[in-house]
Length: 295
Image 1 (cartoon, rainbow, N blue to C red):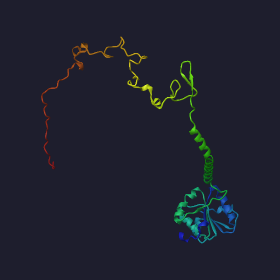
Image 2: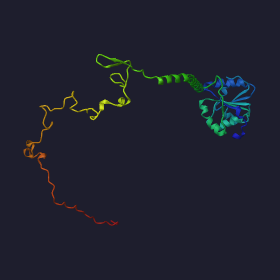
Image 3: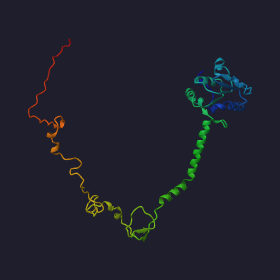
Image 4: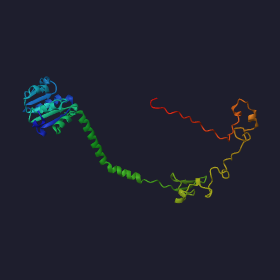
């Protein structure tokens, strides 16, 4: 049977997500909710054992293999407990009714819904029933609720946080007042300051004086270089000591180390060859005889 023979309306064809452990309780709930309808419960495997657990005269349990043997079974509502890997089997189930079709889908079954929707060329409506929510839905709902509460909290306290932030930005350093000088003649101020924006007498410095750095003045500006012996009174100039060697750590090259005093076997005794002025011979070029292709 083809997809075109399905006459179930879109709002009567629903998917109820649930956990695998909740399927039996959800099935009992749906059977009690639709007592006035003839219900056909279908699964991929044999589920005749569920007949003892559900005491209802309007419910019939069949499998996909039973539908192949008896395809003329008709009912008001079909409830699919699971899905098979072949989407055509689900389409055959839908041809057994013209009114209602429900699917109890766990996480594994929901992965197969895409194949069915592609085959039917329409999406299936999902409806989560109260007290039968799957664990994944509860976790997502709690996360969404937590996010909503945090956003509401941030919105309510946004004005208060903005006001505190403005006060923190507008906070200025305490002004340091000149209180006088101590016993050593150093100025005393009421508060600490990270910059030297005053003279030693307590008066404020100008902007040009603030930018000026007296440590690195040139000689023209009245400063001194780091190794200026004239102005470096604390440091003594470098002087050679009596035990220092005249020419450093190495002794100078004298007659004691000349070539005449060395042994003949020492390579350092051999004098360097002087470059001869005679022209060099050109390299000989040997031409080999050409070989024929037959050789």
